[in-house]
Image 1 (cartoon, rainbow, N blue to C red):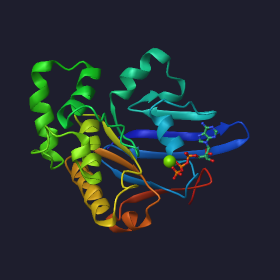
Image 2: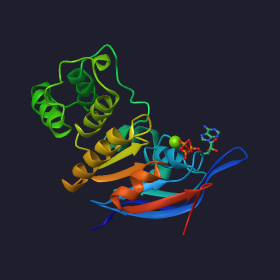
Image 3: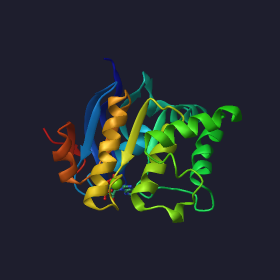
Image 4: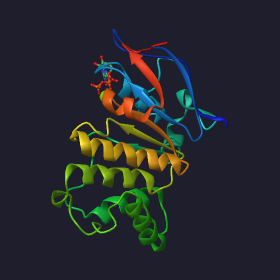
Length: 219
Ligand SMILES: Nc1ncnc2c1ncn2[C@@H]1O[C@H](COP(=O)(O)OP(=O)(O)OP(=O)(O)O)[C@@H](O)[C@H]1O
Ligand SMILES: [Mg+2]
């Protein structure tokens, strides 16, 4: 399997703070990889560099063969369409139903309206919310809202799913269910990169783990 992600000696500085320090690694297509490290270790910074929300100070970042460190502004939307991103704080629209929240992602990418229902239904089925499509976020539990955000990230069929602390606000059992869902999504072929400081979750799945410590990869 070819590498879909490649970080090559990446350093990211914010003024005097070095958030990432000479980070190099690869992720192959179809892999499930944990990204761990204490608060402030640089996990979110790394993910943001991968979606071209931040530029590295030094180094190169390849995604599907393209150098994201050197990407021009007009190519960024197309790059992001290939990546599903699950945010820690959900970013769910409270005035919209579950279905409408997911449709937003399809609208952004410009997928034809006639295909929306089929795609939304399929992805809601996958995350176990087939019967919740017409509810509003305030009618859902925290775990269900996290499932909506995973469904929204997946509906455009991205090449990789990035999840930033997706179990952060959930109790242990609900957190395990979310990680099991991400594992199932990986088994169906999607590459997954899951950032978390939750060691229990990492222990449980026994997947490859990239450990950050003060911006550096632990060997
Ligand atoms: N925009 C910014 N400006 C200045 N410093 C920043 C900025 N973003 C991140 N940092 C610093 O970079 C370091 C890494 O932050 P980052 O958010 O990547 O950590 P993290 O591993 O995601 O932590 P957490 O587990 O708390 O989410 C921190 O010291 C942080 O203060
Ligand atoms: Mg973070």
